[in-house]
Image (cartoon, rainbow over all chains, first blue to last red; front, top):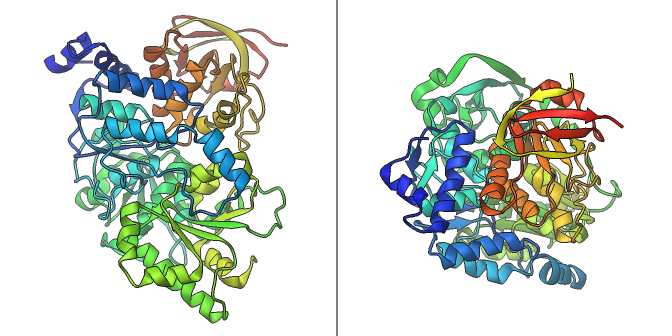
Length: 425
Length: 149
């Protein structure tokens, strides 16, 4: 790999041994993918995936201590994925003991490490860092050093920024040295679509199932999606962006998609059209039957498939402000229609601290509180990733949460029906 | 054919018993439980992976198409390696993915023990190798199935 004088000096140890090892890691990582150079990180802020202080991950915390002690901290501020704990989320004594004493016993010291490394502030914990209320929103063409699959796919696809699907620690290293290896989704060639996906459904496809179907089919490839604007329009307004947020998260978690193009909608597809498609792409046609097939393929991980749901999570990835308002309206209306005051399944809506703050200024905040729904900044995935929560019958409209945990997926309309007293079909 | 030539991502030698995953290896789901509860054999906790679920992973020759799942993957692999619970080597049929590459490189640079990693071994490798086979990995990326139980 050809390095600039400055990059070579860092690698040679002129900024210390630790900085040299950080650079060595990035160079070796890039060489694995044939990168010929390192390019500057031009995005204003970073985003890290690791927000949880799992007590057992000592080697990670020791590495962070070494970075801090040797002054190898991030040159840019960063946001980070949501926290794993929130006392407002329904729990019990045993779970709290497991969460705080065994699993996330390193949370406080790790939070302190993040602050020293460059965390923007205490409100910077969310997977939807790109929302206006959070403020880590890259511009088209910005080169990023991010991780968190749902944020990376959103930044690449909806915002037109350039970022690879980096791992935890690698993304921090890019923010520390200010350079990332040039390969994959950073290059024009790597952003070309090798799949054409044609949407031919009778109604607007459920974002989370459509994303799941495409992710499972194309895995880490780039799809060019035709026909979706017939259902979701050609403007990147708040509603459409929220749809793409949930859709993208499913493509990235059910597969490994880091970038998709939607014909007539996403920035590069609008500018370049079918020039983005490679010669002789593979094709995938999605109709109602195909979506039904994909949805029916999800395994039910509950011990008792007929159990009554004990908890419901909505907001993985975190909800946007518009989604929060919309869900509040729908839950309130659904309960009124059945003559109920409170949701019939303990339910948690999750959103970024900044979005929650903005929502609390609105009259809908009281409406939501009255329904009994808990509003939290927690990461549902981190909550579910423990043996006790894993045994609970939890429902969700998130395909990402379904993929990584024992939570059971239902489309949003069915979730709404279940939590407002309609029961499970 | 019992010898396969791949690309040494992290060169090194190893001899270990094969553990074969035909589906994507979800690093976080596989390792979370064993890291959390002090299981030094690192039994795979990914219930979505029928090839590996509940099988010990530490010290094996892990043969796989690619890793999938959370972008914490590379960090988890590094952590497992630093805690001496990683496989003895990683053997990929296709090109290594960015998360596994991160784990292999982090282990190489930040621990004193490299994690020999070979990719581009070809589809035939995964079609041939079976869990329980004895595997030898050479510095130049050559992988040999030396015996079968």
